[in-house]
Length: 335
Image (cartoon, rainbow, N blue to C red):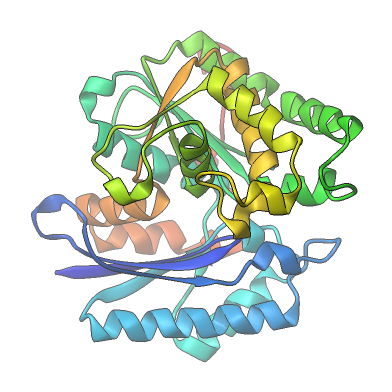
């Protein structure tokens, strides 16, 4: 049996087609369309008409590709850039009416939960109490748990594209004042979550997402061409050095560094500052770079809990509002 997943993020739309026999999602075909939706967001978060039209075409192409590969689905969702857009409902309606594919926006906490599941399955029970960090274009997801699913999960407005647009768009490279204000914003947003992670004392920390993968490569991890089974880690101290290195360079110069792609060069500095600040505040000296993330999490829930899970999860997800069960409680040790 084959299942397909479509993920519309801040930079790309990605399609993953996987065989799911035997309880493990084994990718057989992947495609991505570089839309850079985050570059077409207005001051109020509205996504421009031109970008919406490109999104519709990409989702239609993904659906056609899935059919050619005889895959069911696609299970289609959009992340923070669409979830936070005032014209979100119009976008989702356009996608559905034009492609026949019902795309939803999952609550950020649900994204964190699914990504945690993917990391847990990849790393196994030997990882013990697990902290998970995932930097996207629009948000940062954090989760912690001792079991299959997290004990708590949260989504914060600390995505690399968002912070670049809001804090690092005046100078290139940015000035000390911009960086100082960015760090202040990140520390403020992370204060309660970081306290909870420190109190939980995780045995293992894992990071996912293309942003963390590129930063790990910049800090000396093996390149992606060596495959997903090569162990990679990100050391907090090394990431601090990467922040200083990126801050001294222009966007064009960053794109020449190992691991930093041209489309993500502008947001690489904000991503590095978020990652370093989060690891430091949470007391995490190093983290494992996990190749599985939210798309694999969706596939795993589909495999383990059946097709009804997706129907239930997306029944009210178009609004992007978190369900009561997804709400983070971080008030104290009893949470």
